[in-house]
Image 1 (cartoon, rainbow, N blue to C red):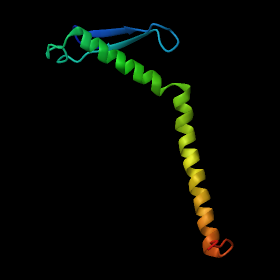
Image 2 (image 1 turned 90 degrees about the vertical axis):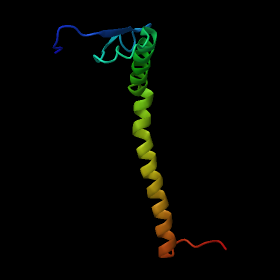
Image 3 (image 1 turned 60 degrees about the vertical axis):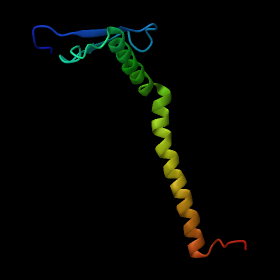
Image 4 (image 1 turned 180 degrees about the vertical axis):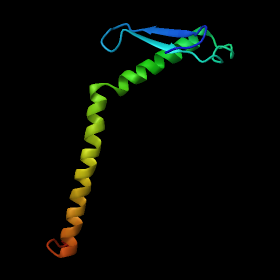
Length: 94
């Protein structure tokens, strides 16, 4: 719910509607006091929308799942090798 008399918004439309049709950004009241050019505000809104799409892409979700899994498996393998050396099952070749 938006309260107040007037709010300034930036609407970013997507060139391809796969990710989103429109992104609506509510500007802070002091955002336009800095005399920022409209192009700069629009560019920043587009960068935020693109960053969101990249974070929520299926490729990023896979990487978020695979990285911890591979780290855990690598840690388990190293621990196993160290344990086998300590217990005497494996010995160094030299």
